Image 1 (cartoon, rainbow, N blue to C red):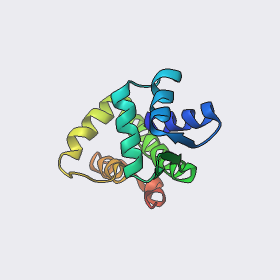
Image 2: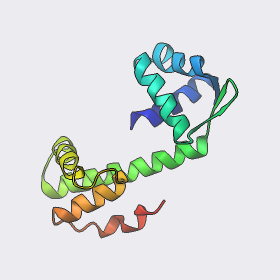
Image 3: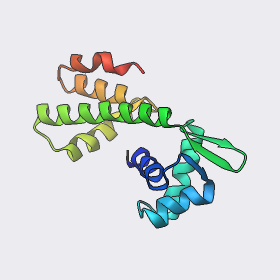
Length: 135
């Protein structure tokens, strides 16, 4: 997810993990050119909800530990998609599109678990990812 990456870039750009909301959105949109205003605003709001950004009055503090956790989580999902695509001889896009349809059966499941179930459903040995599902 490029959102986590965008927050990391913002920290690197400023050299700090503390921002005002307009400053963080401005950094993402104008200085780094990573997304438009609406995307940046939604990213910040979502990151606050998920605990990646802590709001203290007017100040936003990006929790770098939470950021690492989310990155690790998403790396595992990416690894699964690569593995599934390789096993099926499909492109990443084909796997992601089919996974999207598959996910409609399960509703709001964690995407790592969804990827795991999808692989099993396709007859792929997913045991290498079993230990990575916790966390």
